[in-house]
Image 1 (cartoon, rainbow, N blue to C red):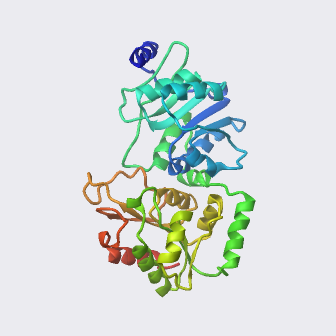
Image 2: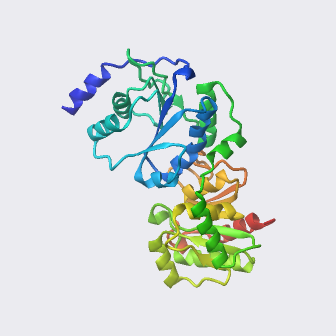
Image 3: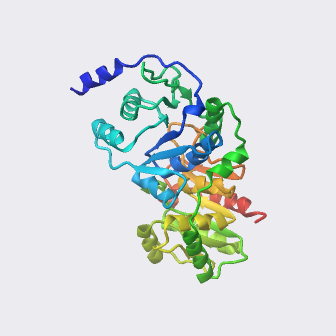
Length: 362
């Protein structure tokens, strides 16, 4: 049954024809970003840039629960939060119910025909565009002027650079890298900035070079062990740096019992919302992180960044996709052949040497 339905939908589509968008007819943009938090962060500048073409443009973001909270309280977007997606039919019904009168649908995810058909059929936009790995892929129909969705991702450029190039192709207007950075900043609500200030005051943090150290990734192999954390905070203490250490409440409680914090290292508090942590990143001098979400946020503030990543085993050392790198000219990365979860698996001397280079001049 599913195969027959898929073939029926496909019969309504042919090769897409690349056509210019008539921006005078675009009043409502729907942007798909129902994946991870970092993916939303790297997209913010691109999304906001479309208001350069129409200041009254209505922008709806289709987000997952794990990234929707980033824009809590935002009045610049309409948010549609997608519940857990059981299957394509469920998503089709949900989109058809929640999205109305969309002129332009943009889906930056690597395109697949089934995904494109679901989104297009449910939303029925005037224009449908997106990214793809192959230039031959596209959608078109007799009822919809659909852009060729085969804008190829350049894996040797960051997502910021890909988005900037994509915006220029769609709008025929240039967007400088500095404009992209400014547009990409996460906006922190005043009450969360105040919570960050209160945290700094409680711990008497002022007039210090501050290192924000995020120790936990999205999986155990991307989370630093307590031994590695202890090593790094002790090294920061020797350098007379003040270090803010952040982790999830669960891992934070483990750290409280398993590491000895020097006098100039403090843990973030369980009750601190994510936007307050972002405000702390903005006020720091150096970001040290195993998590790309924090790294992209720090990049939008043009912070000095040192990232610790597990290397893709399918690529030789030093050969990697640059798409997931932050948009920053102050970014250094250390790759490790295996996970970060055990001290014996990583070269602490490499970390401290690079860390010392990073803190010079703070």
